[in-house]
Length: 469
Image (cartoon, rainbow, N blue to C red; front, side):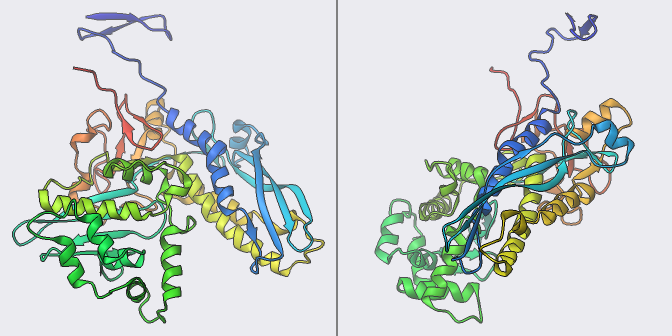
């Protein structure tokens, strides 16, 4: 039996085990505070960099860029906000530079972008006088996942490419060995058609996969037999017809569609986590930078090669319910998502104002109206499924609420669609997620709680300490 003096009470705490706690329990709400701090210091800066510069519709008259931003101190204390039934908020100011492309004149101005809910030291928010908690969301991670379907005499493998933002890609293998891809859940096309559209010749396709396509069934040969295209231009038109049936298919239209869909960062972003997972799963060494977060030809080649290898080896497919393939979206990321929605609306408004303003006299403050951003963020805190009134029955229930994980919410599961597998306890929950505490009824297995020693890493994956054996 071990006895240990505790710092808080100077009393003795007795452990009825041979040893006391091996490591101290860390700050249990640290993930909430750190995530919000990340949003203030980095997350908001990323968003402003994404929308900068905002050009007018012609692209020849005005250009507006956000250079720097800062949150000022909240106008009142938490106690005052509670007493007056108002929100505990901090004002946001940004330095904006407006360039007149015709005359070359540059105007710089610091403008007020509204008041936004500010996190208290306890990891909560005060909204309209009531204390609320933003529950972390446990969702499928961005990246690539390999799936298996039972064919007539063996398993047929496919893959799902899930970006942080943009079109999904779904690969599948037919019984005859041919491989197909669905782009954004449209009609399927042979993978070789997509590779040709991206510039590969038939000889180059055969050469790229020769090292892996060595089974009894030649997957690349079977796919090329089903490929209706014979060159890059034919392939581009074929892809365009499947994605935009009814529209006039020209080579230029098709090329710009594919470039926008996969190579334009505003339309397609694997996210930092997605790039990390793809590198890890496919054994790639692509630097995890913003430029590399779009789709690359090497990624497609590696995914197709891995599907061929799995078809030949018949290894187990990836387990989508494993915590290695699910990640936690914390408060900073959830607020960032709402900010992005508001900033895109603000960008459209700014462009409209640019087209109606006198370019010689207009100032940055006249062009930027932050109301859509304030409205989007306030809507999230007031009515989102993940923004909840804090459980204040006792200090322990308050702490448990801040460590809760929900699989529901925007981009997540719904009670009606969630099956048994996703609700079930999984081997990877050991040490990471409490195996007992989950509600009874419709939410069982969808609302979970972090275990005492669990922590969330920089990529949003749940980690737990293991003792070396």
